[in-house]
Image (cartoon, rainbow over all chains, first blue to last red; front, side, top):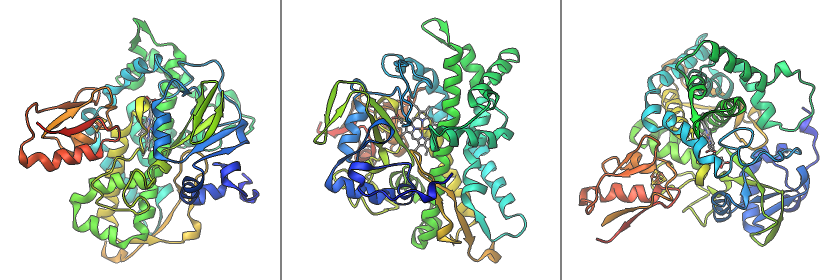
Length: 406
Length: 65
Ligand code: HEM
Ligand code: SF4
């Protein structure tokens, strides 16, 4: 990509671009500035889009499924047309009334009780990754590429019933779909996620297995089996929604800890703070911004008038830093006790994988800290943040301090 | 104080039963279930306040008896 050479943004309030490298590098500053002076920014890019920045506006949109449709949740120049209320990846692209039933099918598999069973496997996986990364006595580890990115892939591949060796292919598809949507490319059909998943579903039909794909093949809505597009869309969603996001949250947490000896020490000396630290990581470094399409003729929001079919971004991370909603919003408080953060969204689309994401983030930080309690950024300029709607470090070289003591 | 829980607002974020397991449980779909009907015992008031203050949907309140 030639992103690096793009012209700087002159005015974020009237011409913002969430795919710009400057946004990747300093999104939190952009939100703070807009929240103070705007608070709903506009841009003509991508066919017209809006960026609210206050918690109150983000919450109002997330709770208003009538005027804001989920038919499109990833902004691109190509808006999905005529797919509501089911959408191409239920339930995230679904609106009421279809949404509730499509979501209810999946809730039991992602309930806290089911997800807690995965903890031993997730811990083992983190330890194995650390063993590999440190095997030859290395004192610099790319925490994003050698550690964070692999953790969610293994867990979700196992739940769905997909080969974990396909992890590299998953990441290519994810990059295409959420980090660089709408980019023009010549891709053979056999090389698309859609084709791959179709094959996997066929394979499961002929060799039934006890995993999520098998479950969806046997599931019914309104007394009828799910259409193949529904199954493929949902599996694609579960694969995509869980990997980039969790990878980002783990990476951002380690980026933070690499620069904060006080917070590292607190985690080592006071393990009971970990659950609070995890929630504060999710508040402060919330990775996910979703989108909606305006479904009404005109909607008033923060002094602006949004038009029919405009894109609206839902920056949950900006809501999480709104001083109207949080005390000391711009400070990372590792033991924050009042934390109504919205990293997992609000309303009917609340992240279905939030219990899994919390487990993975907790275990990833805990296992890292047990093994590598003291560390720093090896080269701050080499840290690379993703662009687009999922924000996190994609390259994160970390140097171990006192490796001889390990 | 008593717990007032609004099932129509709850979206299963799970903060309450993680922070105050003595007072809240999860059903099979992850929605909250309040475990007490009467007043919150004094030793659990802190846990109850934590649950209230961490629910992103404002689905739980502590109300006077
Ligand atoms: C730290 C990691 C994660 C974050 C920050 C995150 C964030 C979010 C957010 C903000 C939404 C709301 C979307 C909207 O309002 O349009 C969402 C929905 C969703 N997430 Fe996550 N997510 C994470 C991890 C996961 C994982 C591990 C999975 C599971 C495989 C997952 C599966 C889903 C699904 C299926 C939905 C759609 C739910 C619905 O529409 O009813 N996510 N996520
Ligand atoms: S924290 Fe709030 S939204 Fe979450 S389960 Fe409890 S009551 Fe429901």
